[in-house]
Image 1 (cartoon, rainbow, N blue to C red):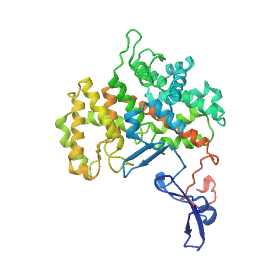
Image 2: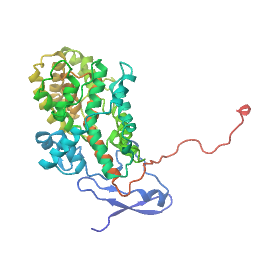
Image 3: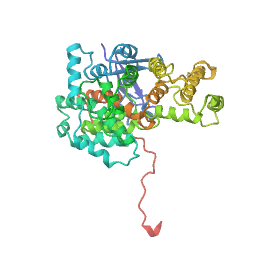
Length: 431
């Protein structure tokens, strides 16, 4: 195909520069602006990077207007209905769905790596008893760098893959450890006879003196959350992982950087904010006044878990997780709980009220995942940690893709300087 370009013209000088188009397999093409500065002494300006492609990626595709989310070309609806989280993790890493033998081998490898060094477990004792679990995760994931020095050789593809296995396998153990420390309960070691989700729930809720009973509805609800959150294109935390990784730092430090970004309330803390909002509303009878506040442009109150920055229609993940949410509430027989009654009434209003429908403020994935995690009995402060577990698969896949890119370079965004022009230093006595 003939090389396609666009012409950029500086009207001040009349100079032109040809900028190549970067083809996509689906969706918008890009413009290679690397010659813009060299040819015209101009920089592109895009706060928030909403019109800037920072990379070429074959992992995840999103069409916010059409409500599409694909992992490696597979619609999220099909994966959520038919796949498992480990199969999705394999897909993200390898680019193709595994056959039975490959999936069995992948499960064996992940199971082999679920234990963590005893020295890592001692790290937990150094945190305050009321430390936020995300603060703990930042520390212990970064600390893995000290226990696996072979991970420093990021130029070796085999080494990178081993690090990917370790991170996917050890995250549930580390997260469960943070939860146990928060509650003052003894740590529970992994059980190699259990599946990935079952093992995590057992490490979270199990006690040494009492056998843990697996609830398949709880397992399916958690698996759905993991699948739906495994990757989401170049969001803030994924972009952070790529930027940190571009310096060729080890993968544990790289993923720790992603955890830092995800912790923000504007990103991974959204489902936690949903629960805080529901507690603030308190009861179904209080909903009308909060709906009125949400509609009042002069009131700062916002309904959390409604609408989405990317999806302009219904969040495709919300349709999927809604069923798991209802199944879990029914299985546990807790629809009558005041908190959940409030949540379900808010959902009904948002789906029917003209104000919300016209503005496409539909319940999103964070709304339902917050309800599910609360129904499972998980402390609100742990909600973003669950997000970390799921997103690690996507983060590590994005990192590996970036590291294998032939023209990969360290990230170095530019700026448009708006400060003082050159001025001379004045001695202290003359100021």
